[in-house]
Image 1: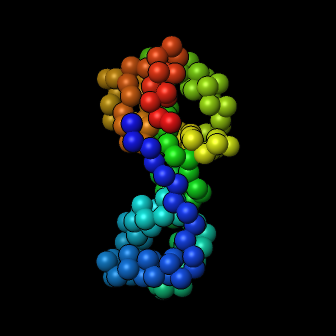
Image 2: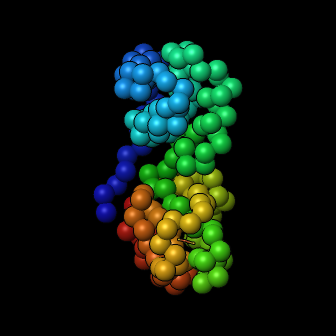
Length: 163
Ligand code: FES
């Protein structure tokens, strides 16, 4: 399994230049704020508050709007994440086929609460609504890879593939 690398924090000059390029692609249009934020997250690994201020500085979008959109959408990372991001499906269809037990096992294995990143930067644990593969519940996604029909017993082997 390929290992993700954490992106080092960009200098203010790099941040300014890269965000300027991203905004050009979206014509600095506030209608495109969500795709702009996604692109910034892709480029830097997460959306820092410096990046949010830079978007505001280079557009006419008010700072409060930029911050509220970035923090409202849970899929937009506003904090640095670990090398591997786990999305745990907390919707009912997964819940009733063992999701609750799986979540306890996951928390026990990682020693993390949702939204936290492990001290060794290996894991970030997030919860999400339905991932669209309910027939395979309970389900987690790791770095976008779906792992279904998981049990507390099968979980350690799956996690061991992500170092
Ligand atoms: S409810 Fe979990 S994937 Fe749909």
